[in-house]
Length: 316
Image (tube, rainbow, N blue to C red; front, side, top):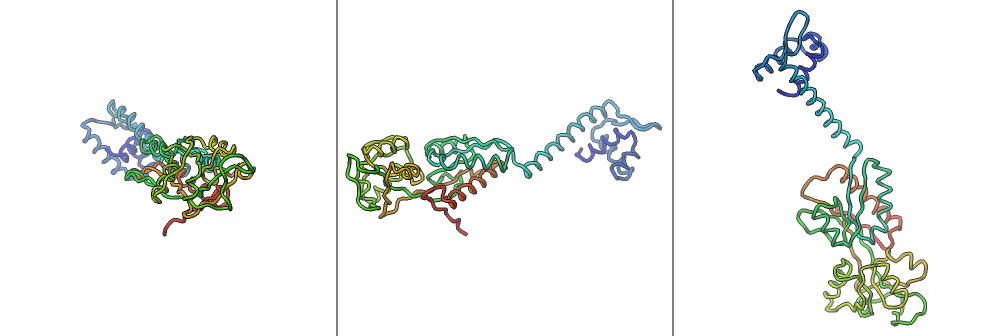
């Protein structure tokens, strides 16, 4: 039996007549009778009782009728759900974001999803970039914003933008370490200053360690603390210096609580990547949020709302 035969059978029973069913289905009556005979032959059971008053289902026919209606209804529901996905994606989407990026991206992304896709419920989880990557690998999140490219063959990632890192010190005259002169400082000189940095498990610290090692140098990290808020407060109080993303200290710079120096030779930057599982098709809702996340990031960068960040133009 196939779906067409089931629909024919239901129509015959509901119309109580082969001729009326043939008219409703727009099919020749002999062809309709042939379909029923084939079904009865396949099942080895009589399905319909034929009389001058019309047709009625046998006990086997009644059983088939009940199940045929269920099958037809399920198929119709499946078709409607699939077609509905194309019109409006629905469901939960989980995205992991490092805390510093979440300050810039979380609220605009939530608002954009609510406006564009009201059927999607967005769940945002914050953690350091390394933990976010572990969540993605374990399937705990559908998408991830990372400071490192996902090199796992099961994952796919793209670089969305590059953000500038700068040296930070206290604003105004305070006791403590001497401050650099001018508006910029060589990387080699910056890492010799007494630094307050995230711990070694933090992606930013790991990147700075690698860059220092490539120049046969090491970081003079006097205080390790995995809290940007604590780092900024310690720097503000003149305890030491730090190297952080420009956007993470924009408010403190505007309020003149901190001072920054551009790092040169080399310029210190880090990439922001959008990652997802690459070994299986993503649900429609995840695809929608992925595209919208890309759109929101590019908009924040273009509008200058993500300070010190430059959009990466995809290769053609």
